[in-house]
Length: 429
Ligand SMILES: [Zn+2]
Image (cartoon, rainbow, N blue to C red; front, side, top):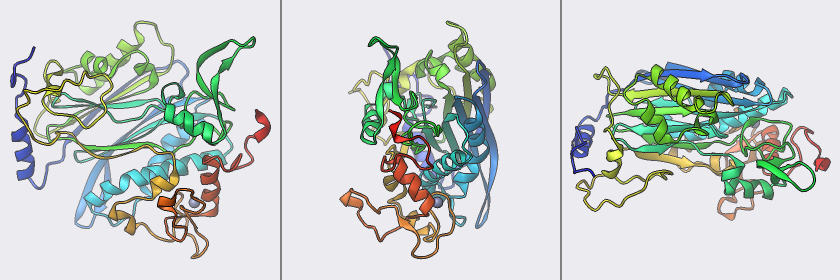
Protein backbone atom coordinates (compact mmCIF):
# COMPACT_ATOMS: atom_id res chain seq x y z
CA UNK A 1 0.00 0.00 0.00
CA UNK A 2 2.81 2.36 0.84
CA UNK A 3 6.18 2.50 -0.68
CA UNK A 4 8.90 3.29 1.76
CA UNK A 5 9.83 6.85 2.15
CA UNK A 6 6.99 8.40 0.22
CA UNK A 7 5.50 9.92 3.35
CA UNK A 8 8.61 11.14 5.09
CA UNK A 9 9.42 14.75 4.47
CA UNK A 10 12.28 14.59 6.98
CA UNK A 11 13.83 11.20 7.67
CA UNK A 12 13.91 10.20 11.32
CA UNK A 13 17.65 9.82 11.29
CA UNK A 14 17.97 13.43 10.28
CA UNK A 15 15.57 14.56 12.99
CA UNK A 16 17.48 12.66 15.62
CA UNK A 17 20.86 13.88 14.51
CA UNK A 18 19.49 17.39 14.44
CA UNK A 19 18.27 17.00 18.01
CA UNK A 20 21.57 15.58 19.21
CA UNK A 21 23.45 18.35 17.52
CA UNK A 22 21.39 21.01 19.27
CA UNK A 23 22.12 20.43 22.92
CA UNK A 24 20.01 23.44 23.67
CA UNK A 25 16.72 22.69 21.96
CA UNK A 26 14.46 25.50 20.97
CA UNK A 27 11.22 25.81 22.86
CA UNK A 28 8.15 24.88 20.83
CA UNK A 29 5.31 27.18 20.05
CA UNK A 30 2.08 26.24 21.79
CA UNK A 31 -1.22 27.05 20.06
CA UNK A 32 -4.53 25.94 21.47
CA UNK A 33 -8.24 26.10 20.88
CA UNK A 34 -11.30 24.71 22.58
CA UNK A 35 -14.94 24.00 21.87
CA UNK A 36 -17.83 22.77 23.94
CA UNK A 37 -21.48 21.84 23.64
CA UNK A 38 -23.16 21.82 26.98
CA UNK A 39 -26.06 19.75 28.22
CA UNK A 40 -25.61 19.82 31.98
CA UNK A 41 -23.01 22.57 32.25
CA UNK A 42 -20.63 20.41 34.28
CA UNK A 43 -17.58 20.47 31.98
CA UNK A 44 -14.90 23.03 32.81
CA UNK A 45 -11.56 23.79 31.22
CA UNK A 46 -8.37 25.42 32.41
CA UNK A 47 -6.05 26.91 29.80
CA UNK A 48 -2.89 28.69 30.85
CA UNK A 49 0.08 29.25 28.61
CA UNK A 50 3.24 31.12 29.50
CA UNK A 51 3.26 30.12 33.16
CA UNK A 52 6.54 31.51 34.42
CA UNK A 53 9.06 29.67 36.51
CA UNK A 54 12.21 31.23 37.87
CA UNK A 55 15.37 29.21 37.37
CA UNK A 56 18.78 29.86 38.84
CA UNK A 57 19.85 31.52 35.63
CA UNK A 58 16.70 33.03 34.20
CA UNK A 59 13.01 32.46 33.62
CA UNK A 60 11.37 29.63 31.72
CA UNK A 61 7.74 29.06 30.81
CA UNK A 62 5.39 26.12 30.71
CA UNK A 63 1.77 25.62 29.65
CA UNK A 64 -1.09 23.92 31.46
CA UNK A 65 -4.33 22.55 30.06
CA UNK A 66 -7.00 20.93 32.20
CA UNK A 67 -10.37 19.35 31.52
CA UNK A 68 -12.78 18.73 34.38
CA UNK A 69 -15.96 16.76 33.65
CA UNK A 70 -18.12 17.09 36.72
CA UNK A 71 -20.90 14.81 37.92
CA UNK A 72 -23.64 15.24 40.53
CA UNK A 73 -23.10 18.98 40.35
CA UNK A 74 -20.21 21.16 39.32
CA UNK A 75 -18.64 22.14 42.68
CA UNK A 76 -15.80 19.58 42.48
CA UNK A 77 -14.98 20.52 38.89
CA UNK A 78 -14.84 24.22 39.71
CA UNK A 79 -12.84 23.67 42.90
CA UNK A 80 -10.30 21.52 41.04
CA UNK A 81 -10.02 23.99 38.20
CA UNK A 82 -9.25 26.75 40.69
CA UNK A 83 -6.86 24.92 43.02
CA UNK A 84 -5.19 21.97 41.34
CA UNK A 85 -2.32 23.75 39.61
CA UNK A 86 -1.29 25.58 42.76
CA UNK A 87 -1.45 22.34 44.76
CA UNK A 88 0.75 20.58 42.21
CA UNK A 89 3.29 23.39 42.04
CA UNK A 90 3.50 23.67 45.82
CA UNK A 91 4.68 20.05 45.91
CA UNK A 92 7.74 20.81 43.78
CA UNK A 93 10.87 22.07 45.52
CA UNK A 94 11.72 25.56 44.35
CA UNK A 95 15.36 25.20 43.42
CA UNK A 96 15.27 22.65 40.62
CA UNK A 97 16.78 22.95 37.18
CA UNK A 98 14.66 22.10 34.15
CA UNK A 99 15.43 18.38 34.05
CA UNK A 100 14.86 17.97 37.76
CA UNK A 101 11.61 19.92 37.56
CA UNK A 102 10.31 17.70 34.80
CA UNK A 103 11.36 14.60 36.76
CA UNK A 104 9.59 15.90 39.89
CA UNK A 105 6.28 16.47 38.09
CA UNK A 106 4.81 12.94 38.25
CA UNK A 107 5.12 12.81 42.01
CA UNK A 108 3.97 16.40 42.48
CA UNK A 109 0.88 15.64 40.38
CA UNK A 110 -0.01 12.76 42.69
CA UNK A 111 0.41 14.97 45.77
CA UNK A 112 -1.54 17.81 44.14
CA UNK A 113 -4.48 15.60 43.13
CA UNK A 114 -4.74 14.02 46.59
CA UNK A 115 -4.43 17.39 48.33
CA UNK A 116 -7.14 18.90 46.13
CA UNK A 117 -9.46 15.97 46.77
CA UNK A 118 -8.86 16.06 50.53
CA UNK A 119 -9.43 19.79 50.80
CA UNK A 120 -12.56 19.67 48.67
CA UNK A 121 -13.99 16.87 50.77
CA UNK A 122 -13.28 18.84 53.94
CA UNK A 123 -15.72 21.42 52.60
CA UNK A 124 -18.30 18.65 52.73
CA UNK A 125 -19.70 19.41 49.31
CA UNK A 126 -21.12 16.71 47.15
CA UNK A 127 -20.25 16.18 43.50
CA UNK A 128 -17.15 14.82 41.82
CA UNK A 129 -15.11 15.36 38.71
CA UNK A 130 -12.83 13.64 36.26
CA UNK A 131 -9.56 15.45 35.67
CA UNK A 132 -7.25 15.37 32.68
CA UNK A 133 -4.35 17.67 33.46
CA UNK A 134 -1.62 18.38 30.94
CA UNK A 135 1.64 20.21 31.63
CA UNK A 136 3.87 21.06 28.68
CA UNK A 137 7.45 22.11 29.39
CA UNK A 138 9.60 22.35 26.29
CA UNK A 139 8.96 19.19 24.26
CA UNK A 140 7.98 17.19 27.34
CA UNK A 141 4.27 16.53 27.83
CA UNK A 142 3.11 15.24 31.22
CA UNK A 143 -0.49 14.09 31.61
CA UNK A 144 -2.20 13.15 34.88
CA UNK A 145 -5.70 11.76 34.74
CA UNK A 146 -8.51 10.38 36.86
CA UNK A 147 -11.80 9.30 35.32
CA UNK A 148 -12.72 8.79 31.70
CA UNK A 149 -11.81 11.98 29.88
CA UNK A 150 -8.89 11.31 27.58
CA UNK A 151 -5.80 12.91 26.14
CA UNK A 152 -4.35 11.57 22.92
CA UNK A 153 -1.28 12.66 21.01
CA UNK A 154 -0.68 12.54 17.32
CA UNK A 155 3.02 13.02 16.75
CA UNK A 156 4.21 14.94 13.71
CA UNK A 157 5.47 11.58 12.48
CA UNK A 158 1.89 10.27 12.44
CA UNK A 159 1.79 7.96 15.47
CA UNK A 160 -1.19 8.07 17.82
CA UNK A 161 -0.56 7.67 21.54
CA UNK A 162 -2.90 7.41 24.53
CA UNK A 163 -1.60 9.62 27.32
CA UNK A 164 -4.38 8.97 29.82
CA UNK A 165 -5.93 5.92 31.44
CA UNK A 166 -9.59 4.94 31.33
CA UNK A 167 -10.91 4.62 34.86
CA UNK A 168 -14.33 3.34 33.84
CA UNK A 169 -15.21 0.28 35.86
CA UNK A 170 -16.74 -1.29 32.77
CA UNK A 171 -13.42 -1.55 30.98
CA UNK A 172 -10.81 -1.66 33.73
CA UNK A 173 -10.53 -5.02 35.43
CA UNK A 174 -7.56 -4.03 37.55
CA UNK A 175 -9.57 -1.22 39.09
CA UNK A 176 -12.57 -3.50 39.72
CA UNK A 177 -10.26 -5.83 41.64
CA UNK A 178 -8.77 -2.96 43.62
CA UNK A 179 -12.17 -1.68 44.65
CA UNK A 180 -13.47 -5.10 45.61
CA UNK A 181 -10.32 -5.69 47.68
CA UNK A 182 -10.89 -2.35 49.46
CA UNK A 183 -14.40 -3.31 50.48
CA UNK A 184 -16.46 -1.83 47.66
CA UNK A 185 -18.95 -3.68 45.55
CA UNK A 186 -19.02 -3.61 41.77
CA UNK A 187 -22.22 -4.38 39.93
CA UNK A 188 -24.91 -3.07 37.64
CA UNK A 189 -27.98 -1.13 38.63
CA UNK A 190 -30.66 -3.49 39.84
CA UNK A 191 -34.10 -2.45 38.68
CA UNK A 192 -35.79 -5.10 40.78
CA UNK A 193 -36.88 -8.53 39.73
CA UNK A 194 -33.27 -9.45 39.10
CA UNK A 195 -32.93 -7.22 36.03
CA UNK A 196 -29.58 -5.48 35.87
CA UNK A 197 -29.02 -2.59 33.54
CA UNK A 198 -26.43 -0.02 32.56
CA UNK A 199 -22.69 0.04 33.00
CA UNK A 200 -20.79 -1.48 35.91
CA UNK A 201 -20.96 0.75 38.95
CA UNK A 202 -19.32 0.89 42.32
CA UNK A 203 -21.47 0.60 45.44
CA UNK A 204 -22.15 2.43 47.66
CA UNK A 205 -22.64 5.49 45.51
CA UNK A 206 -23.31 3.97 42.09
CA UNK A 207 -20.44 5.73 40.33
CA UNK A 208 -19.24 4.23 37.01
CA UNK A 209 -15.72 5.56 37.60
CA UNK A 210 -13.05 4.15 39.89
CA UNK A 211 -11.11 7.37 40.32
CA UNK A 212 -12.14 11.01 40.62
CA UNK A 213 -11.72 14.13 42.69
CA UNK A 214 -14.54 14.77 45.13
CA UNK A 215 -17.33 12.22 45.48
CA UNK A 216 -17.39 12.27 49.23
CA UNK A 217 -20.72 10.47 49.21
CA UNK A 218 -19.26 7.33 47.69
CA UNK A 219 -16.63 5.00 49.08
CA UNK A 220 -13.11 6.31 49.62
CA UNK A 221 -11.83 3.57 47.38
CA UNK A 222 -12.82 5.95 44.59
CA UNK A 223 -9.39 7.53 44.82
CA UNK A 224 -7.91 10.74 43.36
CA UNK A 225 -4.51 9.17 42.62
CA UNK A 226 -3.89 9.92 38.95
CA UNK A 227 -2.44 7.80 36.21
CA UNK A 228 0.56 9.77 34.99
CA UNK A 229 2.32 9.53 31.68
CA UNK A 230 5.22 11.65 30.52
CA UNK A 231 6.56 11.69 26.98
CA UNK A 232 9.07 13.73 25.04
CA UNK A 233 8.17 14.70 21.50
CA UNK A 234 10.66 15.09 18.73
CA UNK A 235 11.35 18.68 17.76
CA UNK A 236 8.86 18.17 14.92
CA UNK A 237 6.11 18.37 17.57
CA UNK A 238 2.60 17.03 17.50
CA UNK A 239 -1.05 17.65 18.33
CA UNK A 240 -2.86 16.89 21.58
CA UNK A 241 -6.60 16.25 21.71
CA UNK A 242 -8.02 16.47 25.23
CA UNK A 243 -11.73 15.68 25.36
CA UNK A 244 -14.51 14.55 27.67
CA UNK A 245 -16.31 11.22 27.28
CA UNK A 246 -18.97 12.90 25.15
CA UNK A 247 -16.37 12.97 22.38
CA UNK A 248 -14.82 9.54 22.97
CA UNK A 249 -18.18 7.78 23.18
CA UNK A 250 -18.71 8.85 19.58
CA UNK A 251 -15.24 9.03 18.03
CA UNK A 252 -12.12 6.89 18.02
CA UNK A 253 -8.75 8.58 18.41
CA UNK A 254 -8.12 8.13 14.69
CA UNK A 255 -11.48 9.64 13.77
CA UNK A 256 -10.83 12.62 16.02
CA UNK A 257 -7.45 13.47 14.49
CA UNK A 258 -8.57 12.72 10.93
CA UNK A 259 -11.70 14.86 10.96
CA UNK A 260 -9.77 18.06 11.68
CA UNK A 261 -6.50 17.47 9.89
CA UNK A 262 -4.86 20.65 8.71
CA UNK A 263 -7.20 22.93 10.67
CA UNK A 264 -5.90 25.41 13.24
CA UNK A 265 -6.60 24.38 16.86
CA UNK A 266 -9.77 26.44 17.35
CA UNK A 267 -11.44 25.11 14.22
CA UNK A 268 -10.15 21.61 14.95
CA UNK A 269 -11.73 21.56 18.42
CA UNK A 270 -15.06 22.78 16.99
CA UNK A 271 -14.93 20.17 14.25
CA UNK A 272 -14.28 17.33 16.72
CA UNK A 273 -17.19 18.40 18.92
CA UNK A 274 -19.41 18.75 15.86
CA UNK A 275 -18.48 15.27 14.60
CA UNK A 276 -19.13 13.79 18.03
CA UNK A 277 -22.50 15.45 18.54
CA UNK A 278 -23.88 15.20 15.02
CA UNK A 279 -25.05 11.58 14.86
CA UNK A 280 -27.18 11.50 18.00
CA UNK A 281 -27.46 15.09 19.19
CA UNK A 282 -26.07 16.38 22.48
CA UNK A 283 -26.43 13.58 25.00
CA UNK A 284 -23.75 14.74 27.40
CA UNK A 285 -21.47 17.70 27.97
CA UNK A 286 -19.02 17.44 25.09
CA UNK A 287 -15.79 19.40 25.40
CA UNK A 288 -12.57 19.36 23.43
CA UNK A 289 -9.24 21.14 23.73
CA UNK A 290 -6.75 20.92 20.86
CA UNK A 291 -3.13 21.88 21.49
CA UNK A 292 -0.51 22.12 18.76
CA UNK A 293 3.09 21.82 19.86
CA UNK A 294 5.19 22.95 16.96
CA UNK A 295 8.65 24.10 16.00
CA UNK A 296 8.89 27.87 16.45
CA UNK A 297 9.73 28.74 12.89
CA UNK A 298 6.67 27.14 11.29
CA UNK A 299 3.49 29.19 11.08
CA UNK A 300 1.23 26.15 10.57
CA UNK A 301 0.93 22.93 12.55
CA UNK A 302 3.22 20.23 11.23
CA UNK A 303 1.30 18.18 8.71
CA UNK A 304 1.41 14.48 9.48
CA UNK A 305 1.43 12.17 6.49
CA UNK A 306 -1.96 11.88 4.78
CA UNK A 307 -2.69 8.36 6.04
CA UNK A 308 -1.43 6.53 9.07
CA UNK A 309 1.67 5.63 7.19
CA UNK A 310 4.05 7.13 9.71
CA UNK A 311 3.16 4.46 12.20
CA UNK A 312 4.91 1.84 10.20
CA UNK A 313 8.20 3.59 10.39
CA UNK A 314 8.97 3.26 14.06
CA UNK A 315 7.98 0.78 16.65
CA UNK A 316 6.00 2.28 19.45
CA UNK A 317 6.63 1.37 23.04
CA UNK A 318 3.09 2.41 23.73
CA UNK A 319 -0.05 0.41 23.87
CA UNK A 320 -1.91 1.50 20.79
CA UNK A 321 -5.47 0.37 21.19
CA UNK A 322 -6.57 0.66 17.62
CA UNK A 323 -3.56 0.26 15.46
CA UNK A 324 -3.08 -3.02 13.67
CA UNK A 325 0.52 -3.29 14.78
CA UNK A 326 2.03 -4.60 11.64
CA UNK A 327 5.50 -5.95 12.12
CA UNK A 328 7.13 -4.10 9.34
CA UNK A 329 10.03 -6.12 8.11
CA UNK A 330 10.84 -3.47 5.60
CA UNK A 331 11.72 -1.00 8.28
CA UNK A 332 14.77 0.80 7.12
CA UNK A 333 15.45 2.82 10.22
CA UNK A 334 16.77 1.34 13.39
CA UNK A 335 16.78 4.44 15.55
CA UNK A 336 15.03 4.77 18.90
CA UNK A 337 11.40 5.87 18.95
CA UNK A 338 10.70 9.40 17.97
CA UNK A 339 8.27 9.93 20.81
CA UNK A 340 10.18 8.93 23.89
CA UNK A 341 8.41 7.64 26.97
CA UNK A 342 9.89 9.16 30.11
CA UNK A 343 7.46 7.99 32.78
CA UNK A 344 4.32 5.92 33.18
CA UNK A 345 2.65 4.83 36.40
CA UNK A 346 -0.95 4.13 37.28
CA UNK A 347 -0.89 2.48 40.70
CA UNK A 348 -3.56 3.68 43.12
CA UNK A 349 -1.24 3.17 46.08
CA UNK A 350 0.20 6.32 47.63
CA UNK A 351 3.10 4.32 49.06
CA UNK A 352 4.11 3.34 45.54
CA UNK A 353 3.53 6.72 44.02
CA UNK A 354 5.25 8.96 46.56
CA UNK A 355 8.21 6.62 46.94
CA UNK A 356 9.95 7.83 43.85
CA UNK A 357 13.07 6.13 42.65
CA UNK A 358 14.63 9.04 40.88
CA UNK A 359 17.32 11.02 42.67
CA UNK A 360 15.18 14.12 42.92
CA UNK A 361 13.40 12.54 45.89
CA UNK A 362 16.40 13.50 47.98
CA UNK A 363 15.49 17.10 47.43
CA UNK A 364 11.98 16.82 48.80
CA UNK A 365 12.01 18.31 52.23
CA UNK A 366 12.10 15.67 54.91
CA UNK A 367 9.82 17.31 57.44
CA UNK A 368 7.01 18.32 55.13
CA UNK A 369 3.91 16.22 54.58
CA UNK A 370 4.40 14.65 51.15
CA UNK A 371 0.76 15.35 50.27
CA UNK A 372 -0.37 18.64 51.79
CA UNK A 373 3.09 20.18 52.35
CA UNK A 374 2.41 21.23 55.96
CA UNK A 375 5.42 21.20 58.22
CA UNK A 376 5.73 18.14 60.43
CA UNK A 377 7.67 18.23 63.68
CA UNK A 378 10.47 15.67 63.80
CA UNK A 379 9.03 12.43 65.14
CA UNK A 380 5.44 13.29 64.29
CA UNK A 381 5.49 12.32 60.63
CA UNK A 382 4.13 8.92 59.69
CA UNK A 383 6.20 7.10 57.10
CA UNK A 384 4.41 6.37 53.88
CA UNK A 385 5.58 2.79 54.42
CA UNK A 386 4.04 2.42 57.88
CA UNK A 387 1.77 -0.59 58.02
CA UNK A 388 2.74 -1.59 54.51
CA UNK A 389 2.31 -5.25 53.75
CA UNK A 390 4.57 -4.83 50.80
CA UNK A 391 7.90 -6.17 52.05
CA UNK A 392 9.68 -4.56 49.14
CA UNK A 393 8.89 -1.18 50.63
CA UNK A 394 8.72 -2.08 54.29
CA UNK A 395 10.89 0.64 55.71
CA UNK A 396 8.75 2.29 58.37
CA UNK A 397 11.63 4.50 59.51
CA UNK A 398 12.08 5.93 56.02
CA UNK A 399 10.43 8.90 54.40
CA UNK A 400 8.56 10.34 52.73
CA UNK A 401 6.28 11.22 55.63
CA UNK A 402 2.63 12.16 55.95
CA UNK A 403 0.92 14.36 58.51
CA UNK A 404 -1.65 12.56 60.65
CA UNK A 405 -4.55 13.95 58.64
CA UNK A 406 -3.12 12.75 55.32
CA UNK A 407 -2.34 9.40 56.93
CA UNK A 408 -6.06 9.05 57.75
CA UNK A 409 -6.83 9.85 54.13
CA UNK A 410 -4.31 7.27 52.90
CA UNK A 411 -5.72 4.52 55.10
CA UNK A 412 -9.25 5.32 53.98
CA UNK A 413 -8.21 5.14 50.34
CA UNK A 414 -6.70 1.73 50.96
CA UNK A 415 -9.92 0.49 52.51
CA UNK A 416 -8.40 0.31 55.98
CA UNK A 417 -10.99 2.66 57.42
CA UNK A 418 -14.63 2.72 56.49
CA UNK A 419 -14.46 6.48 56.20
CA UNK A 420 -12.02 9.35 56.56
CA UNK A 421 -14.32 12.00 57.96
CA UNK A 422 -17.25 9.99 59.21
CA UNK A 423 -18.54 10.11 55.70
CA UNK A 424 -20.61 7.16 54.73
CA UNK A 425 -21.32 4.56 57.33
CA UNK A 426 -20.18 1.05 56.66
CA UNK A 427 -23.69 -0.30 57.09
CA UNK A 428 -24.87 1.42 53.94
CA UNK A 429 -24.83 -1.83 52.03
ZN1 LIG B 1 -0.70 16.21 55.02
